[in-house]
Length: 187
Length: 438
Image (cartoon, rainbow over all chains, first blue to last red; front, side):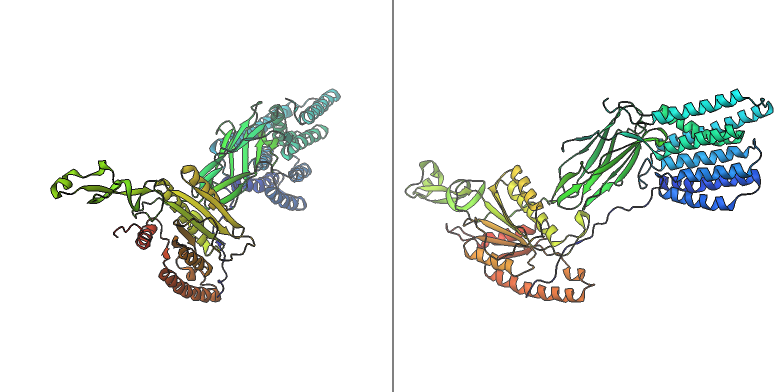
């Protein structure tokens, strides 16, 4: 008689690929923060533009799935365009909320790329990212305070001031893009 | 320890997050200036702050990541650590995320992925525990390492593919003490008692003097009492030559690694390793012949712990894939008088036929049956397979009975102690050329 069909079956199960709790939180923030920014826009203008809101929300979900992509740019652009279009109070405190939501969106999308989704963040990582996000939000509030202060003392329209501001921005852009190159590999 | 492999060829590069912060920040600020919209400056602030901060904290020198696997050889169930050592001269690396590719029959703790803060958590010495759960040679890695600077604006990604390691996992052996006496061996050296009476160390009895006996062996008390010369006789000492014949043609049953069910090959290799360890610890010489689908491999008899390592490594290389056909022939190199221990699941009649042939040639043969218990239950979802195995088991029973009648001891492997009863049987059945009383 021949030997019955035999063969070892591997019963060893691999580890699960479930998302770590930290990854769930970060990806939730990527989806929820644009919603919060749109909510702040609605609170500032009492309306929203559905034609912009829907794509932004869809794109934010895509950002959560692919945080290392450039999909975050159209999300921020959509929120900004909607803000420009419908918010006419240039010193509304809701701008702080919108800025905070954008800060959270940006930081969460960046944070999602530092570790695999199933890796658990250490407490030190959590603390550092939360602390820095808080600093960004505080900086936005500080900018709002400055805008509010300057708004009460509106300077006269000045070509020199405008030129200075534009040159500063251009210099900042050039510096940032120049510094973003690869470091010297011969070190 | 595996040689450390440094990966320093990759470079820091800007990420999508950095592009987003620069573009969004500058665009919103420009529109704010040109459109007299100070509220847009508020929206631009987080992006501008991030862009400036991360550019100022940009890493300025290349990173070196060394990856080492703590041990290249493990026993089943043992663990080692895949370690990442980061050399960051600029000190601007902040987060490290790693993903180690999972090999078959390995567990990784806590996961195959890990993340840490480089400076706060000591992430410059990050490690992933790798536990081997089944014998064999496993590939571990490659590991993908991503190191990020502030706000993940710049990242360093390791070049994967060059840091794969080989992890040899030896079968787990069970230590046991065999109390059985040795088998017949014609040599007169070693640590075991021979069935021959000859100059040795172990007392055998007192007998009348014969021509050729040494004077120093005269037992004067008995000689004076009886009036005739008597001498003290001793058992000779001899070594033991054990050949382990391992059949790895088939792997029957479901293997769950060291923590789960054992397949026939698991039982075979673990049993062979345990027996080899036992005899080598006793100072005996052990040889190994493995028969699998790749062919025949022989390990000449030797003793010592180094030889145990060679035996386990040879066992770990057992491969059930291949086209080698078992003809049932007795392998060459088996000296007469050696104790041959055959490890087989007895999936085919060929194994016992070979064992009977070896016994007929004057060797002491013990067959260790390594078929997992309850094999038919493992085929409960396959009625035909279940019936086939039940028929095969009936045939096996008959074949085992015939083999036993031919002088081949067959015993089922039940872990430590399985061999004691069999070795006693072998000793009982061994030819007693010296007329030693049983």
